[in-house]
Amino acid sequence: MSKTFKALSVLLSYPSEGLKEAIGDIGEIIAQEGILTPEAVKAIQPLLEDMQSKDVYELQESFVLLFDRSRTLSLNLFEHVHGESRDRGPAMVDLLETYRAGGFDLVSTELPDHLPILLEFLSNRPLDEAKEMLNDAGHILAALAERLTRRESAYAAVLAALAEFAEAKTSSEMAQELLSVKDDDPNDLDALDDVWEEAEITFGPDPNAGCPVSRDLLANMDKPISSQPNAAAHE
Image (cartoon, rainbow, N blue to C red; front, top):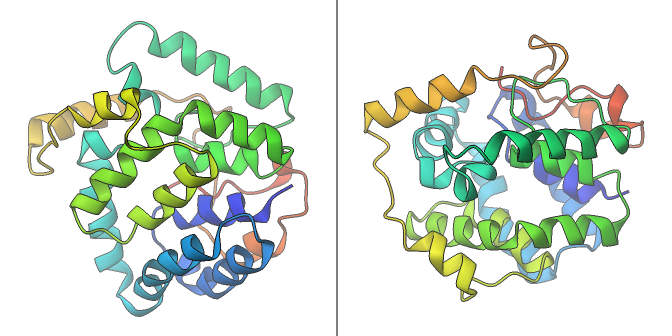
C-alpha cells in the first residue's frame, strides 16, 4: 500500500476547502514515504503552497480551465489514446473489471480511466503492480507533464513525478506522437460541450456517491479502499 498515490490522487482532485485543509498532511506523506525522489518532492512544493495560499474559487477556476476545458490536458487517460473510437468503451470496461477484481468499488461520477481514480486504486496495490500500470500509461503521463510545463502550471510537477516513477520519458515515440497534437483552446465552447456530453456516462454503482476531500480521508488511508469515500469526485 502506498499513501503517496492516495495523496497524489487527492492533490489532482477538484479543489475544495477540505483539500486546502489536507495540504499539510499531503506534503508530509509525499516527503516521508520515499516513493518519489527528493527532487520530485521539492518540485511539488510550489503546488502545495498555491493550494494553501490561494482562494479556493481561484484554484477551482484554474483547475477547470486546465483539466475540464482542455481536452489535450484531460485527466481521463483513454481520451488521449482512444478519443471517440469504439475501442474506448471496451477499454473502460476492462479497467473497471480490474478495479473490481482488486476489491475496488467505484463510487464516483468520474470515468474509470480518470487519473485520480486510478491512483486511488493503485494506493492499495503492491508497488510493482502500481509501477507496471503507470508504465502502461507512461507516455500519457509524460505528455501531460510536458503540456502542463508549457502552460507554466504547478500541476506539471505531479505528472512529472508520476512519469519518473513509471520510468516514462517525453522523448519516447508514443509520447512524441501525443505531443504532436496541437494544444487546444480552453475557450473553445464547442469542445467544452463535447466534454460535458461525455461526462454524462457513469460507471459507478451510485452516481450520487462520493464526498468532498477532507483531512479524514488522509487519516483513514489504511482502511480497505472500497469502504472509503471517493477522493476524486467533484463537489
